[in-house]
Length: 405
Image 1 (cartoon, rainbow, N blue to C red):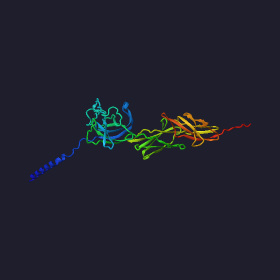
Image 2: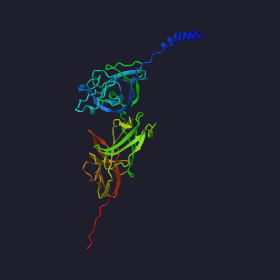
Image 3: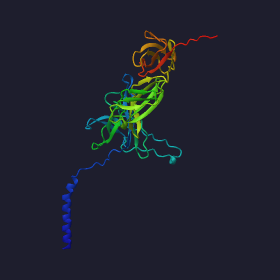
Image 4: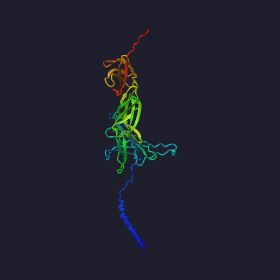
């Protein structure tokens, strides 16, 4: 009886296994291939450079990204529009590994690092696409640079430049393991997403001078910020480009402002001062990458002019402004109007006398107001400073002496 029961149990187990087996074998088969191993993806650089050759040579914006991986080739795609379209940019390959020559003591010589199994038996070229210097076009191109040898862990370093870009963009990319022709090795792979790769900011408008406070050596400026930049840099320099002042402004300080304001103190009197602004973004480990400088706003006035009047002339001294190419003097008998041209002096002249303005002559026992305008050259263009020096003087009468014996 016991043997009969054991026999029935065995038969039942066989029947159950036959019923269950088909359902087990119908389950989806998961690929045994591991997903692409890509680590340490980061943006390394952003800027403007010249790309192309000959007549195709052109300046354009670029970004540089890098990563570590175990594959022999990777394909880089740019994610377009609403992220539904992926546009292939090129194939990236690491530098071939050189096998060290044996020495007299091979036991002390470390073995050559072997390539990962995915590496083709043929030595890959440094880049499958593009060849030579990539031409700049409306479509971004990639220019892979030589990478380092794999580390002891079997990881290769990959670095790629993408050029032909516009300023002020935040770009998204995907990295796929591929063959040398750019075909994805694993069609089920979703790729490694690289988001927020930034080009440098677009050029801003020149700042505007609001007011100069000569008595406290201070000034107010404004500029129009953009929404893309993470901060802004202000720079004041001489007409020859020598740095006078540099300051960074955080974007939070000007957030939502149609016109951001900043002050410049000191104002650097005695010089033609050029003020400009640019935006910056932060990449990688927080490194700042700056956009193009704006055009400059310039101004200039003397440290202190001195006036004295006697008989029928006005003497002016201290007319010294570094960077000025010429100066023009105007005189009036009223403070805010009626100014007439009196004299033009050269860049090196710092003192002069005025006896006539317009069709009028300077007379004693009268008060006169003097304005001095400064001119300077930016490239081939001569410009007039929006700031001028102004002061007043009373012309004293001549004193006659009578000799008494």
